[in-house]
Image (cartoon, rainbow, N blue to C red):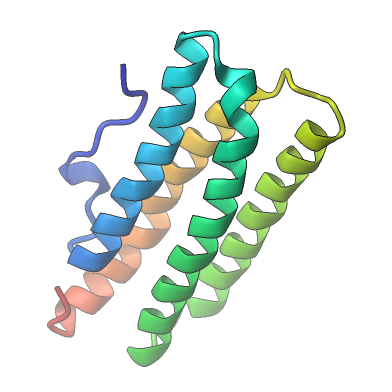
Amino acid sequence: MSLLKWNDNLSVKIAAMDKEHQKLIGLINDLNDAMGQGKGKDIIGKTLDGLLLYTKTHFADEEKMLTAHAYPELVKQKNMHVKFVEKVTEYKQKYESGNTALSIAVVDFLSNWLKSHIQVEDKKYGVYLNAKGVK
């Protein structure tokens, strides 16, 4: 059962970013589903690797788009992205050092951060870019 479900409340009204956000939600849901099947420990390392790789791609895409349109809160966005990557990297290091009981903490952090970040920060750039005709 999915922890996060894509809906209009998560849409930033920018098709490319919505698609990338859906992929991030899918990665979190994969981890949550694995936990529900008792396989959280087996998949957490793979999921963290996937998240780190994909968030770097997503954040780069997002920041490139925001730079191209002179988004006034770009620096704030970049700082939040850096902090997110640092936190996921910290979880990954804990996992690799033998702390395999991280699944619930990781899922909680990821789902809460993603929902909050999209619904507050990313929606701001959605409004800004939509006003400039970007869809």
